Length: 239
Image (tube, rainbow, N blue to C red):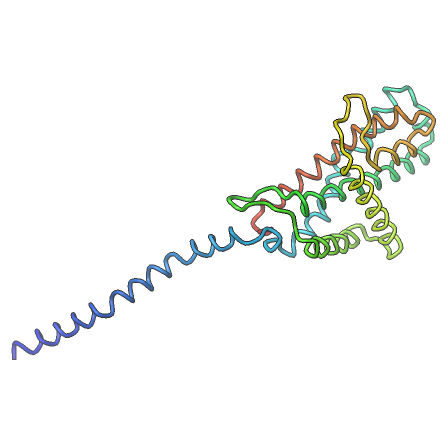
């Protein structure tokens, strides 16, 4: 009678030894599952990790931050003071129209730069290597971004088409200028559509001075766009 429990326990012990390797392998696998998933995510192509939220986040932050940081009003104020062009601010309604026109040019410039960073110069995220998007992925991202921007700005269909047309013109001129890029001298204006268009709108009588001032504003705008993109890409929702 005393041997029965001993025999039964011995059989269970041998059975447990036969099962245990697979059981403990499965247990180790389950424990390492989060680690394995994180490793898989880190080696995915960068463009595949962009969530649906990123185009909308950029569409919201770019115009809001550009307006909040007052880059355009500060650019005009500095130009007026530095060059004694106080007549530009005499008529309130004309000055307001001027700021609106320049603000739109600023939005075009920051959108062009941000799209360029996302699609062609994405900053590295963790251990993932950054690489340019495929052309088809860049086109999809650009379309989603512009759709979100249209909603954010509450544009009509006509306004949206006008902005997209101007943005495409910006991108084509920038690409053409980059193909023949050379070192710019310290007191030389940038070869950029924002510089030429803003200078003409701001003060066509003093184009060269207006171009230099516009070039400084462009640097601030493009730096802001690159910073916003980098911040959004670091957020968990963008991975």
